[in-house]
Image 1 (spheres, rainbow, N blue to C red):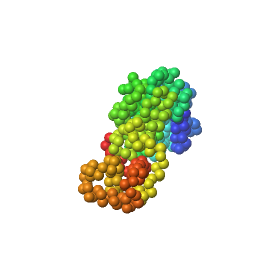
Image 2: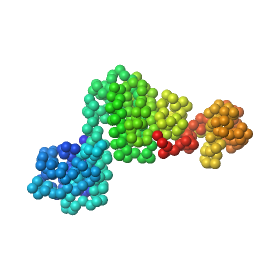
Image 3: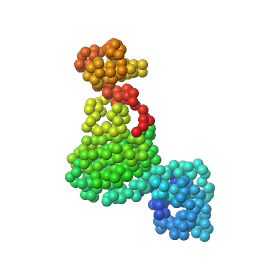
Image 4: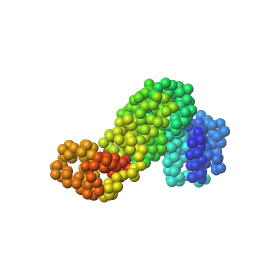
Amino acid sequence: MADLQRIVDDLAARLDRPLLLEDGRQRVIAYSEQDGPMDDVRRDSILRRHTTPEVRAFLRAAGIHEAAGPLRTPGAAGLGLLPRVCVPVPHDGRPLGFLWFLDVDPAMTDAEIAVAAAAAPELALILFHESLASGLASRRELEATMGLLRGEAEAARTLIEAGAFPRAAPVTVAVARPLAAEADEALRLTLERGLLAVRRRLAGHHPLHQVRFDHAVLLTAGTAAFPEEMRAALGTPVLIGIGAPRPTLARAVESYEEALHAAEVAAKVPELGHSAEWSRLGVYRMLTRVPHDNLHPGLERLLDDAQHRPLLETLETYLDLAGNAQATSRRLRLHRTSLYYRLQRVEELAGTDLRDGVERLSLHLSLKLARLSGRYPSPLADPGRAL
């Protein structure tokens, strides 16, 4: 509950107004310092951790469970209730909780209510985690999975002893990176919902999951990573990287790091498709660990000038096809004479000799490194490409 309390205290300080957070059953789970107006209901709620049935019925009748956004609720002198602003914290159309502010001395402005409403998605994500149960208490599982991805041996032991993962099974990790320019709390909540749906479908594979600040992680027992199931369930366009299986859960961090690299490569090399397996990345598997500025000197000059992009694409295709001019002409739909002219221009501008095998290797690897660094984007690269 520490995260909930942090958000509640921060929000109260920003608005300079005390507040109280209830769960979906209107039980008090967090509240700020109460240094403003106080009514009997607020006082009793804090002392008893819940309101009376009469107050709950009154507020339900005011529409808090059906509200799609913040609403003002009237006071009721007979119940000891002052007017309030209620900010629902919803998930999948049902309230996971309610933020409550006393709407007096002075009443809340629309701008203040908007600030309070902006905190609802982050609160929903935390409350959603708190509501999970899958043999291991949700928070304990969340913390253990987080430790697992940091390489903590004790985390694997915790999950296995709790029955969340089989002791002798191998583990495979998949990472989903959203194509959205910036992940926010609403997007992370979408990923959370999607991963829970995947977990229900893959229950026999003992899945575990984690939503990080810019990607989602799925761990499964066995050697399958289920990229299509992930893409179908996550509800937002993603690129998926899949690490190689490891024989024990304690080594999941190795598969996780590979999955991160594979997702990064998939983002830079669209030809690989919507998912990329570490074991099938070929040369990119090696190049992810090479400094991206370690390029052929002559190629640097071509990369810095957009007008040379056709020359670079011709060179890359020629090298991809092992220097086969006929196959390159066919692939590019380019006359053989035009191909030779372009390759000659590359030699002149880059100060290289394509008859030299070492030079060809250096140029080829440099082009792939430039892809990974973003300096030489693929012609297929499009952040909004349909997934």
